[in-house]
Length: 185
Image (cartoon, rainbow, N blue to C red; front, side):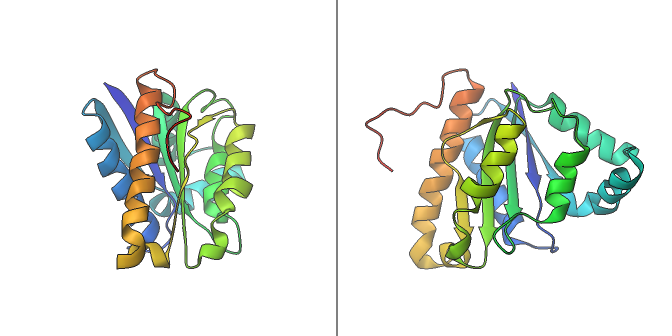
């Protein structure tokens, strides 16, 4: 059985980032019944992350989350986008993580924002971060703006979610991304 940690960086109590994370987790469960997923909410670890940044030492609660990430077979990473980038809490979490914790680990990138103008943030901010960390990022990133939660965008969002989680599931099984040149976008 594969283990996946879903890191959600939504800052509000009920955030669209958490909703997207939950949808990704559900879709991954449909793609493969052979996966255990644990969600880590960075909002709940905010003080611990800041303290670790200042002191260089992780609290037991933060260390537990970092250990889960390091031990996981794959990750789902979802963050809100503000002013064309991820929030500091998101970056600080990865800054306190051991440099080699995600080397070669399959990672699905996801982001939310209030406007589609931020849709390239996955490509311009998240992919470079995880490339630096030497993770194996799935080809399809999932971006959801306010429009995607309405009736008009819901079907396209669901298709992106299913495509990205199928790629992650395939990587977890050791079968590459499962995509071919004939697959439609």
